[in-house]
Length: 329
Figure (cartoon, rainbow, N blue to C red):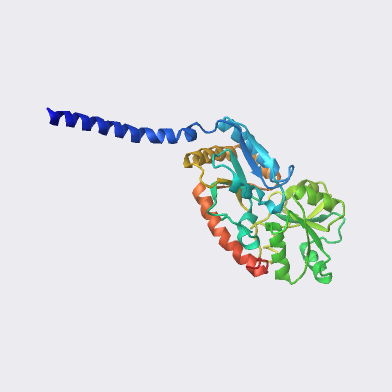
């Protein structure tokens, strides 16, 4: 009788333990299962009205419909676009705040003293697109080609000014790489975004601007002249502008960007965000908005994006050291 009582009791305890083990994940995962339950903040590193901001607002609207909660774009310009990623270091990993990651983030370990790692201390969600870049001058500028641009810089060391979205941005480093390859000297003028730099160019405060195609409407209206683009092939929208590659300068530059969450974000939440933004970026209106700035969708999964980040950090170190721009250790 005692033996029978022991067996029944042991079976009951085993069943209770099994139930507890099965139930525990459900309780732990309840927040992820119900996500999202409130608005999501999406922080981008550039000014309102520019080539980054405008497509992002369409993307956010698309994602809002998919997720069933508002996705609100917040602009944090300055510092070359790295502020959103910096913010993630002090943000709760609950999925309700996301950040755009721009290429300068991967340069931070070599240019700035930071206490976090751009690869290990961010959760990579999805890559969305890549930029198109170009150099523009006013339509009445005596400089009519990229060859003349370089010739002017060679004849007038340090006098040829160009605006960019900021120091240590992809635009800045690529222009300095071009100057290094051509043995000339440019004068860099940093701005917070292309809406500011283009107004400075139109107002005669700088001689040229290197940036994403926020300049497109001004080129098409005849106010600015496009000297070159930086892709592997000519722009479909501006086929008359040669690439740096075909001009023999040995440079191809695009700058993929996407979304990250804080380190430690629940994988279930990351997957929900990835899936929602993947659907959002595939919608025709987002593709159409990118096309206005001569940009195209560039998808990478969470895993692919994290791998891209790790590889890019190594590549950026090499170019920064080559240009002699690394901060002293």
